[in-house]
Image (cartoon, rainbow, N blue to C red):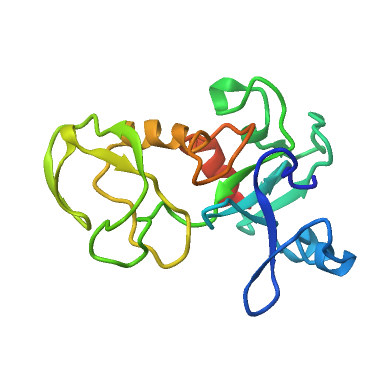
Length: 210
């Protein structure tokens, strides 16, 4: 399925061998053809306004050959729920809520290309970064790249999803869950009409199999 970017605020990008280039309405057909090619395992990338990178995971079915230790993936056009004989529709794209699905079948989803990181890259302090309005819920005084902070009185900074950044650490699963849901509302990312959330087990499974 063609990656969904229209109306989301995501900007499609491709790598020309030396750097990332935005795709726009004035881009050539050859440039758009460079966006992705599933046959050669070239995945579609996009960026948000802050430069964070995202990868499209298209709807697919799979079959595991346990003897040869091979996972065979077949992409599914549209949102068909009929799997090829011997194949399984990956639950991350389905309506089976209990297996990590959704309330409707989806054509694919965007996932962060890199782990959550500090906004200032590889610096040793937070410096001038954009903070969320969300306070840490886990009370503790800890050492971070930002120095010593007391969680219960400190707002969480927004993460970035870029290469070469320090990992966003010293955060509980609950706080990460809450902060990730606010990404869709933060102006720094420029997102619209999306459901930002902490990655589900099913989504991680879909990425790992692919």
